[in-house]
Length: 202
Image 1 (cartoon, rainbow, N blue to C red):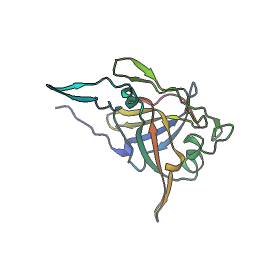
Image 2: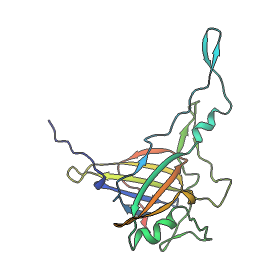
Image 3: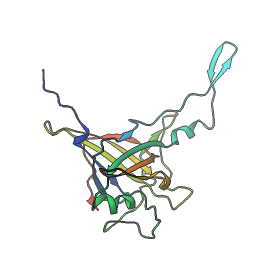
Image 4: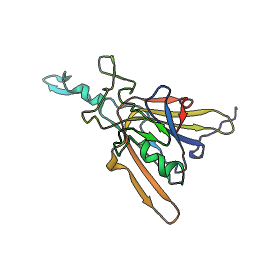
């Protein structure tokens, strides 16, 4: 039988990526190994009504809203004196709403409206809206990649159009480390990837 290698959290890295072309990114060592995300977007429950001889599917004008509901994503990482402490907070959508969104020495731009395609019930592909009602909100793309050190193979998840509500980001202190606990909402597509998107490090 061929040798099989497993992926572990120690083999993972995570990138926060802006919406520029080519993009800028912030790469984090995946030291906490607790990345959590759905493997695909949900399909809304079918609207069913009872009939005299059983049941039937009822056309529902609001059914399409279910495809646009955000999907949660979460991860955590330790604070260090370089990347995480100064750059990570800024990369999470410019929470201070600075006129120019800077991450390190790089200007970042929102990824809103670059969420990929979501397949509606009629089979049509639709894109996510180009802006929120609150125009001060920004989104980024997120990629988490695990590379098997022995086989060299890679497997990863890409979440598009991710918004990080400022009130959901936390700092947790312990005797051994200070940890950032990060929670986001995926408004775009969720895809498999075999490599990180090429870009410029911030």
